[in-house]
View 1 (cartoon, helix red, strand yellow):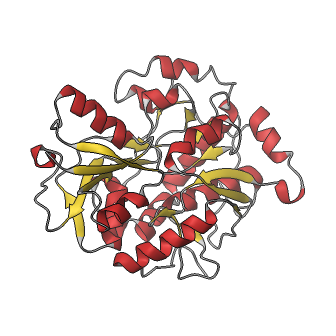
View 2 (cartoon, one colour):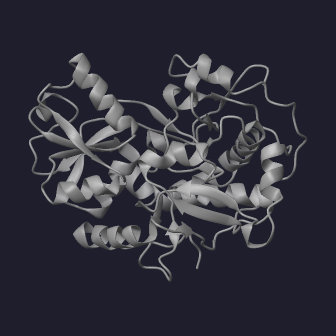
Length: 343
């Protein structure tokens, strides 16, 4: 079955409940799944010089443009990639941390045999595996909660994380990021019948749910301290995985959810009783996260992204996200890369 053509029919409470059950069962295991969609492998290119170091990027990360800067692309192998290729037998796979409950991004589709893992992020993972190991199926997926994305990289449990992870200056002090592969922004999700109008004073005395360790929670905490968010807004409700916020909203335990608009739109597609409230109030970019010293892997992923933007990205967007984010929206084109000088 062609994964790019698979169209789940999850809607409302039933779809969310089915996904939540599958996620709870599978979270304890490393996921090894086949891929039915293959993208053509990009031609090899000459490698470039060794990286000048990613720490410099973190040190200079002071504004919206600087945090997007990354090492220049290269097709050359290095210490990190050599170690991945040296794995033998069943272990010769790219180990990637992903989400398995974000509809249309990385989720187990209960309408497919074996509840296959699918979505926009998953397509990118297969493309990276194809380039590094010559086999789009050579992936070991590990489902990790939002709060464990950075620890999983630092502890070596995964080679990389492809999980709607926003590039930030704070995170750059702990991990390395590829060039951005998606642009989004934080938005408010609430019941259609709610009096909440967006990220404004209508959140006064409201209970807002966010994922632990997310940029949404950090933004709410900072804004409430600075007086940009009503002091009465309750932001104590945090969950390990973003979908749990939607479940809590459906159960009436919270009044609103704040998350990336790209994720919120997919949640609204699951449950027609909720909707996005107001416009995005931040600008954020997703990147592939890797170990801080994995310069060769960062460069290689950036090289893959160069080819993916030219062939593959748009098809994946149209397949998974255009129905919720629109064919001509600001999110419908890949963001341009910015590379560090002298890298």
